[in-house]
Amino acid sequence: MGKLYDLHWQMPVDPAKLKKTAPFKVKSVEPVHLVSRARRRTALQRAHYNIFNLRSRDVYIDLLTDSGTGAMSQEQWAALMMGDEAYAGSVSFDLLRETVRDLFGFEHVLPAHQGRSAELVLMSHFVSKGKTVPGNLHFDTTSAHIFFQGGRIREFPQKRIFDLDDTSVFKGDIDLDRFSAYLAGHAGRVPLVIITATCNSGGGQPVSMANIREVGRLCRKYHIPLFVDSARIMENAYFIRTYEPGYSRRSIRSILRELYSHVTGMIMSAKKDGLVNIGGLIATNDGKLYDALKQYTILFDGFLTYGGLAGRDLAAVATGLREGADLDYLRFRVSQTAYLAARLHQQGIRVMLPPGGHAVYVDGLAFCPHLHWQQYPGQALTLALYLEGGVRACEIGTILRGRDPRTGRDRFNGLDLVRLAIPRRVYSFDQLDYVVSVLDRLHRKSERIRGVVITKEPKALRHFTARFALS
Ligand SMILES: Cc1ncc(COP(=O)(O)O)c(C=O)c1O
Figure: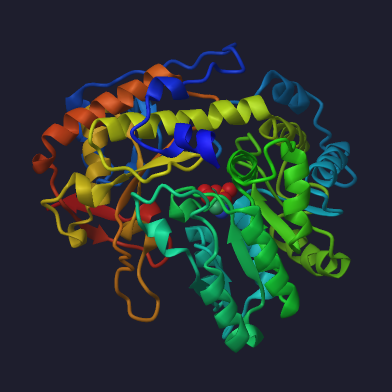
């Protein structure tokens, strides 16, 4: 894993070496403005200190999420015009199904309007009271859907995923020792296993082919279906190609075909690596399972050939999936996160290393050493970042993780991160430099960042709608 590994991940590294020339040029322009500090302050108050309540016109650089925020290509816009809006038997669905068969090797495809509706379909079939769904680290909507069906989660991350300074790759791998020991004792209560690749709740860290192969083998041994949450599977395949021995000459498609040959199926929010603003899917080669899932798709998302999407959306997903697997695009994509992480690291700001594919995670606890974790330093830094420079980021920490349903206590795991998610094909390196300069300014006066208290909180997915006040 020699040289490339050093170039990308061993910090400090010269950020200039990470800059890649974009494999596209700009055709359509969306203006952005930095509103005044006074207006930003008022905007925060009106938003009850929850950045999800901010109006996007008050945001200068929006790094809230990489989900549904990417720029579509001219081919995708052209595909929209060709969308077939037939209720049943849409040609656009055929196009999507052919793309999924070709890229991923799955025969049966169910469209879904986004990732969480695919989760609803899957969990409605598999999960009930008394069942437990293991994984590396589930994304929050995945956990919420498991809880919603009365199930529990059991996570087997590598310990090193919580060590921000451990620069080894594939920190998204499942801890095989703990996982296999668990299956040996509890396979009966496990309806399915989910690997999230890359692992969003763990910093966007990739999962290795070797790990997926072994988890697949264990699941087959116990007759347990294995699904891959594939929101960022292209980035994951790119990491496998770059860092896993034996894959450096393989195409992304052939890596994906191999990866999915080890598992039962995939669920995907296409709003990330599918390069669309809305869309998702479920795919499998198991005909019986497909028949069982179909009824839920019809119940929740609509007929089998549209699944909650317009025909034009299906066409855009089909085109976006192919573009998402393009190597030049992926090189550029991953160089943006590597660059941002390297520059922040250079400024003495603690970030998760190595950076994942879609985002850079800043350590809120290290940034605000004067705050206790119960003052939610990740959330506090997110608010300060917006006030300082109009940059919207997202807390990925105690607020996001929510409360343990059994104890009612905050699920603190020693980390309180702020995610700077980079939308696909949207921002330039100059705009990333601006983000670095704002964080650097803030870092120099971080003792002025105020902690946060929760003033109102919903039962599930609290980060979206909770209200806060400064303490
Ligand atoms: C890994 C992962 N799974 C599932 C989802 C849910 O997808 P959606 O937002 O399309 O419902 C997300 C969204 O960010 C995600 O990152």
